[in-house]
Length: 568
Image (cartoon, rainbow, N blue to C red; front, side, top):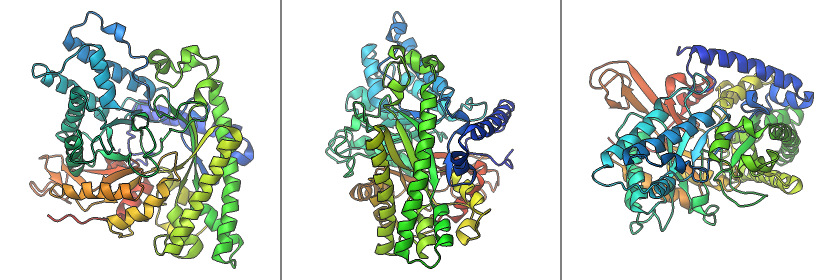
């Protein structure tokens, strides 16, 4: 099984999964054959990637469901308190399973602590010493379900993120504590948990939830999760933190041309990613004797031409999706999870116009190196050139937003599959060491083998975050779990806020001996000598078993160098 070349690390081989994969491949071919030849060529030739191609015109991408609007309180009448607790999590599971089978992407619970607190209050449920263990068991079983279930498409785990950190009520704080405690003291690697860091709530010692922020940091030091949404960064601090959440790094679905700015109930409807290095290779080939400045201007024009094609692709898919019937989304319809109640709409366009149409990018670091011969973090001048390119992308997309009155956004793609797919396609046209390494660097990230210290890495990458209003993330690599140096995580979170970082994660090797259970960083088990080791690593936001990484991510993993050395 482990020798299979998977499209993403969450995939496993099953009969149903095999049938799904075969069928989806046929659907992808049919969709590409039906598209306009020029637009289809952008994908086939590797200039862009149409994500979740099998769902083209059949569903949207990801969602932050509005849990409270349609919560079925009437179903709880006459139930015992114990049964009510069980039923709450049954509803949550039903929502996850339903959405997992009627959309192509992930599910982000926007304020898990606040929402659960609200539900418990309305059901007049008190969590106290008498029933806390039962409450904790239900939380733990919910996390275990997300971690273990591989029902989607018969082969894939559900991509679920729990955002928390803001509730200051006793019950909301208890929800937060229990989620973190259960996750920290388990072998779960899912769900992704995002802790919203906000001054006046949890960031400072005098804040009510500071103790929970510190617990989150300890959990990160042990498990790499939570990751952190930095609400006090310059470009985030004017946003209502309760109204914004993330599914992951590519789902900052906040701005709205048609109404309230909020993430709750909103979808990233469609998104495609552009292969930046490919445009640089073309520019060098066509204009070998031009100066760097001239090449940069030529590159910008080429990028805008491709972005226009991507915009047309997004519109084609968007309007085909809008032609579907509300009945095609039964879970959304039943629980009123979307921004608008589907039962009240004449057309799905009235809902999906509130979502985003996103254009992503990958390989900025390679692009600057191809055009200048040096890394973008090698000098202030090259860093300025890189920023100039991303600012150009954002201005182009803002122009689309203004011209067409739709929620276009720019995202820094963390591309698990395309990090390997793009150089593989480019190899058919060009020969270059940056292609031969087997992967392109995510979004605007510095190279994974840069060797930069964590403070410099955040300083370089932080300046890009404000442009990526569709979502982005920065990661820091540790040599091993910083169990005895949790202060370093807090210090780096503070530095990231000062660097205007939007979303921050911490990576380190996490090895688990499957024979004796020892955790750490090792080749063979330090305790029993076994080589039966599960190696947990992060790929595109989620933790996964490295044995199932895509070829591109395996190549990247082999090149990763730490930004922070942990003393043992």
